[in-house]
Structure formats: structure tokens, C-alpha cells
Amino acid sequence: MRTGVRRVDTSKPAIHGGPKAKRTPCGSGRRFAGNEMLYLKKALDSNTLFYASGTFVKRACEMMKKYTGRRYAVACTSGSAAVHLGCIAAGIGPGDEVIMTPHTDYGSALGVIEEGAVPVFCDYDENLQPTVETVAARVTPRTKAVLVIHLAGYPAPAGEIAEWCSKRGIAVIEDCAQAWGTRLKGRRAGSFGLAACFSTNDFKHISTGDGGFVVLDDPDLYRRVSNYADKYYDRFFDRSLNQAHHGMNYRMSELQGAVACAQLERVNEITRRYHALGARLERRLKGLKGGRMMQALPGGYSTYWWTLVEVDPSVMNAGRDEIVSALQAEGINAVSFGRYDLIQNRLFQERVVRPWLADDRRFYPLVQPDGRSYTYSVDQTPVHRRILHNGIQIAMNRFYTETDIDEIAEAILKVFRAFC
Image 1 (cartoon, rainbow, N blue to C red):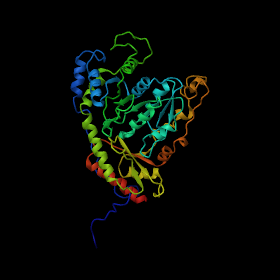
Image 2: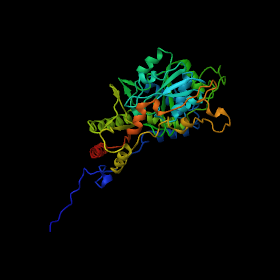
Image 3: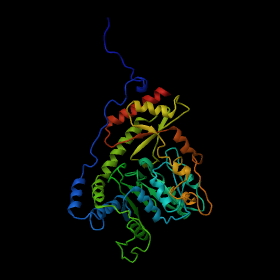
Image 4: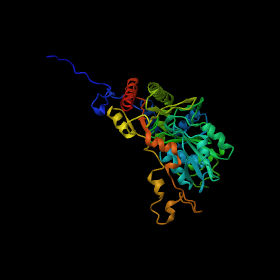
């Protein structure tokens, strides 16, 4: 009788009983492994956690100025607050329209709505970035600004869009929440627009739990934004505008500022690691049959907060969601693209902004007092609609090892080969 080890068909997908391609646990590590504890203790020992009396928030703003090359920086409570402050810098008000791409966190749109303005969604290219053409297709006489979102650590063509918009009196605000370390043709994301907005939420390259920054160059706009984030106390100026205008309490605390300083000391190291891992995955997936990994623009330097593989349905004999299930069975973190699609979200479909109001004001600003009524459909953004059907989002993590990346690539290649 013959005995021996039974051969395993390693090409067989795990979902059909084959072995998993992801054979080792993913690498892990400590996010807060720098000077965070030291600086937090110093902040507590200072006996004040108020940003104007302390040193850490001010230091973090100086670090942001150096990091981005912008003249001014304002710290705030979140990336959503940062985008709202970007809207304030751009002078957005009731009835204005602000163009943006539709796959993003609510925070990209909520500041627009808060000012009584209207988000207008433009399409993007096959790599999820807006273009001059997709923006131009949505411009109307009411367009006040374009919010350019550098999605997933990939650079958007913010310079080209800003140049086009400047000739038409349209402001450009950059949303750099997922774009720490991202560059295009040597320029850092956040250096192109009137203002640029950064997030230090826990789900970003660097974290203070929650927090954000706005950077800009104009001294008058800096005063406006700084005051708006501090209830318009005019605290760092001559006090002549003390509570003269409306503002919010978007102040960052010294505890957040302490952690921000420690994280900013390491931001380049952190984002270089994301770039190296993402570029390795991109090389491994070059020539993927039945799909493609999204690419950076020519001259782009991506920091791969996550990435996307788009399925080619003309080649694959399984639907996107079935392929996602097969990838998950291989042991990798993959989900169907579209979790952050705003167009089909309840707010933009039902248009009920303030449900506690009993009259038509609950629809404002998506229904305007002058009778304008905005409706939202993915048919207005055909590339976005296509990728909603065919896109697969692949998670990235700076604690991944090279082996992790190779096994993730192996899993993707294996599943796509099996379903071609």
C-alpha cells in the first residue's frame, strides 16, 4: 500500500477548499512609539491644556507650516472642521455651489452644507481623481469653489484644476485627509489650493485621535479662519474684531497638540513606509489579468492609505462581490468599493438635512429658498457608477511586512486567475 503526503492544489481558491494564500498573520506594531508620552506629560505638567496658553498646539502649527510650505496653519478639532474652515477661507455662503467627487467621508460635504451651500458631485477618472474636464462639466454661475479630494493617498491634479479655476474666479480647497506625504511632480498635496485641509483622525496616516489643520498663505484669510475656529475672539491679533463675527469652537487641546507634535516628527518616516509597501503591491499586480490596480498620475508619489482593484466584467466569469468573498477567504482585507459613496447615501437621496424641523426648512440647503431643488443620481457620474459595481478596496497598513504584501498580491492573482 502506498503512503505519503497528499498533494494540495495551491491554485484552488480557498473559498472552494484550497489553501489560503495569506499564510502568516499580518504584521502589527505600536502607532504611538515616539515622543507622545513625553510630550503628554509635559503638557500636563504645564498646568494648562488650553491651546492659547500652552505650547504644543502652537508648535504643531509651526511644524505644519514647515511640512506643507504654507505661510499659516490653524489647528482644529477634526478633519471635518478643517474642511469647514476651508469653506470659510473661500467665502462660501448660502446658495453657493461647491463641486467635489462623490466617494468621500461625510466630513468633506458637511462644512459646505453647514454654510447653506450645496455639494455638487462631479465624476472622476478611472483612478478616482477629478479632472479639469469632470469639474468643468458641473460648473454653473453659482459655483463658488471646488473641493479637490486627494483620495486614498493618491495625488489629484490640484494644480491643473486650480489654474483652470483661477481664470474663472473659483476657489480651490484641497482635502488632504488621506494624503499625508502625497506629492505630484515634486509638490506636496496641500500646496496648490487657496487652503488645504488635513485630518489627524485615528483612521489616517498620523493620529491624534481626532484633530485637523488648515494651511493657507493669505494673511487676511488666516485671520478669518483662525478667528472662526476660536469663536472670533481675535485672540492672536489686535482684538479689534473680538467677537465681531460668527465663529465656532473648533479649538485643538494641548493634549492633541502634544500627540500631533510627536506624530509630525515621524510623518515622513511613516508615509515613506506606506509608499514602499504600496509600490511593492503595484509591482506585483502589474499585468493582472481580469482587473487592474489603480495608478497614480504621471509624476505622482502615492502613500497608499488604501488602494483599489477594478474588476473587468468582460473577462471575469464571476461578479465583483463573489470575487470579494473569494479574496476574503484567502485571508486578506478586501471589501466591495462604495462604502463612502455619498450620492446614494440617505442624506442625499431623501435630502432631509434637519429632520427635527416640521416644515420645508428641513430640506435646506438641498432645496433653496429661490426654488432650486437638487437631486442626486449616480447616472450623473458614469465612471463612479461603473467603479461602484466593479471596484474592490484593498486595505493597507504600514506595519505590513514585505511578506504580507507578497501574500496579498498572491491572493489577488490566484483569485483572478481562478475566475478568468
